[in-house]
Length: 226
Image 1 (spheres, one colour):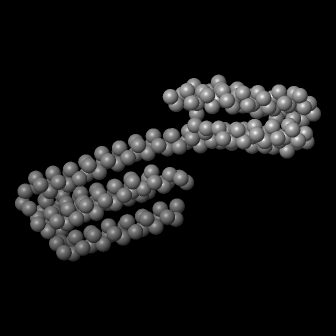
Image 2 (cartoon, rainbow, N blue to C red):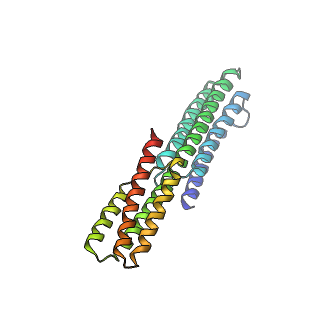
Image 3 (cartoon, rainbow, N blue to C red):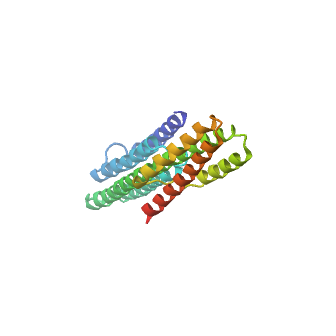
């Protein structure tokens, strides 16, 4: 919130300085061309302000929003230079000032919208990856907690290998792997549940089922990628 307030204050100061200079140097009796340039410069400024206030980066997503901010900054300064150039030259005809500045605005809006759509797709992909990572990590953490309750060295070593195999699983998932992932989750839950029953044979059986479920999931993921 504090950063947004500072940005608003800086923006208002820039806009105020521009308006003061605009009216002090030329007064209010301006040509239509000058008012058109004045309007386009303000549009560029508000596009820049809107971008900075509306698009915030979550942790790990700074690069995504950076492109939107860079486009907005570039458009503002290009429009500012173009508008000042037309203000200084002050052509009688509105044709070129309107055409050039309209083209700049359209290009900016098109590229910004394309950037927003691309960012939305990327954010959805990142969110999917986070969910998949949390799912595998939660199973691995559950297995590690259960491993601490195992006293038998042989079973403990098997569970360590099982844990390492689970942590090495691909974090990526596909709809085709839903059944395999459910099988893996059930196998891990059954293994963790068997640890407290003090039944080495049963625990060993569940360890083997986890290995089978991991292999099944890995094979399904590989097939889905192909």
